[in-house]
Image (cartoon, rainbow, N blue to C red; front, side, top):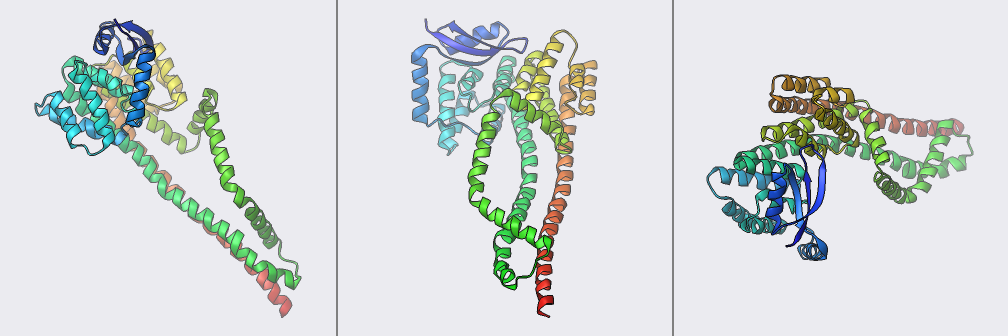
Length: 407
């Protein structure tokens, strides 16, 4: 009987790994479910399985689905299942109608597994580059409860909300970033190209230039000398920063520092709270136990400080201390979020109130982004104007000095 490597989350929310002998992946998944685990992945053990995976990766080009692909697929499958179509026909429809080759390849492999008797969640678990643990856990809960169509509909809503939340922050920062780039480019152009045009004139006059003009000329010379090395230095600095962030201590320091930046820190906290409550509420509404749900939510936050806070919350919840008290001690989420979670625990409506908290936090993210945008744009504009004005004033003072001598 072949052996299979598996990864699953146990009832305490801890990731477990092991090797099991079974006839196929579906049997492995079934045994793990009977143990009370949430299977994340099951694959053949040994060199044969590794070689097969490597060949599959080579011939498929290592293609995986992006967030937009997954959201669209989830929405379409949920609609087709809700209309009465069986899962095999829904997957075949996706494969036949999607133009993207990567979607056809990934969904083709999933359909082959499903037609071979594997549950959908187990087939998805074999595509970890395309489908997250959260996604697989929700699908597994939907299959177990016989509500796969409704679960996929909620999951599609969750993915859409998460994408909109990220797009709200990312899109709002494009204009200030472009404005900052234009400001820096204008100042560099003045210092390295415009000012040097007047240097021969100043040198021929032999007049002592004003101190501000001398300072600007020196800054321009320095900038012109550094400019050819600037791009390589930036590349090296970015590579060094990325290498440093591979160490947990550096990531922890970065994440903690970002949380304490004025305005930006509040935005990050609110964004984390929205993602946490939206994901937790969706999991709980789909029947996932609290400890297991926290273990899955932890993987979606992307902030080491927040992940450690969730770890402490899991340990505390195991001891019966609940959810809101340990989260309040971490001082990570806004007070309103903690209050709503506490109210949900007291009224046995944690899932519903977590989703309500998510809506409030998402609205607050939009307000904070608008406030940040309203603050950044005038600051950048005023700073750029003052810098350009100071350069022009210094240049005019030097020209007036020349006129005075000529007079």
